[in-house]
Image (cartoon, rainbow, N blue to C red; front, side, top):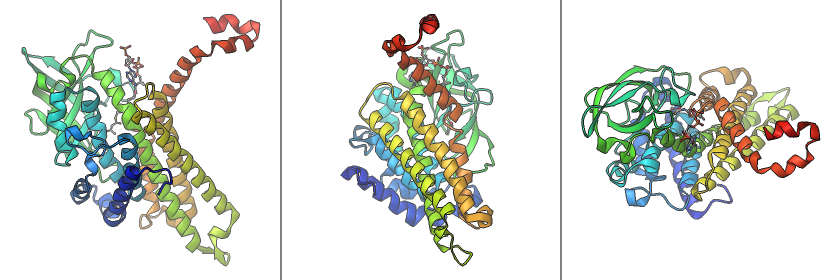
Length: 405
Ligand code: CAA
């Protein structure tokens, strides 16, 4: 339990930890092997009220003073037992944030209560075969085919939760001639004509949650499903969503690292070599100490970012990218070191540690690769440097012209 948790943070942490230990951890191996959606786990999360953590009370949720921090705490606690369930849960926040940041009041009232109650699951359809990092390069089209109606055509890639989800937040090109108002978002439901699931991916990690292609073959939607009620806002809504959702991926990284650290520590105390447990060897101790320090630093960056979002501060894009890239890089390092501590056993499927290394890898890739996060951080830094012109006086004369260009 974090000593800085508020009573509300502590309550969500304890609720998530109880489910993680009693329900999720015992079923983790089964669903990793089956690669099937674990409905029994989703039901336990919904029954505990966890699907409403980030949704305001006026829209049927349970959000308190610090909804983003509470979301991160829950994702971390779940991921500590099983990072695949961490994303299975968090992807509902990713899919519903566009409604929260860009939806009309009518859309919020119509869709959010069902999501908050866990009766409906939601997915986020942004990426396509040829539009991953370049999210503006979408090809899926929504064509206005009547006064109040649109039809959506094309295919989306990497839809996490696809097939399980009832609601799909779909980003599509509505004005190919515009540079900045090209894209709009639509709320599509699974039983709509023309919507189907394409290829179901066979994945290295996060195997309990489905990742699929989603197909839109002339799906007809009314203006009431155009997010925010006016076209052209889609890219902005997607970026605002990712600013809020990336701390959740970061929290998945922290939980995964913490889970690996704990298993590696317990194993190091039990594993005997050269007549004593390997936890007594300084090289192993050094690894454990570094793993623990990096995990804690990542956790504090994630919480700091979440608190900024909860305080409604502007310009959280940079810190969200920092949290995502740092925590997920740490997760990959810590899980790799944990496998090393387990030695040959760590490489084997009947030990629990190799799964965490497989699950960690995707966190460096999805919701913006860590290369894209570095690009976002660097752009933010260069922008902030515009306020550092007083330092110009300390740059030798020969570089003055270059600086001013
Ligand atoms: N908040 C609000 N608006 C923003 C914004 C933000 N964080 N970032 C950019 N914008 C606005 C800009 O102000 C600009 O607006 P104007 O045109 O009105 O001036 C517009 O958006 C375009 O911005 P950029 O010129 O910066 O856009 P870009 O093409 O250079 O792209 C990028 C920037 C950071 C590379 C962006 O494309 C990006 O984040 N790419 C990665 C996408 C991503 O994360 N995909 C993962 C999808 S989810 C997933 O992984 C699947 C899953 O289910 C888990």
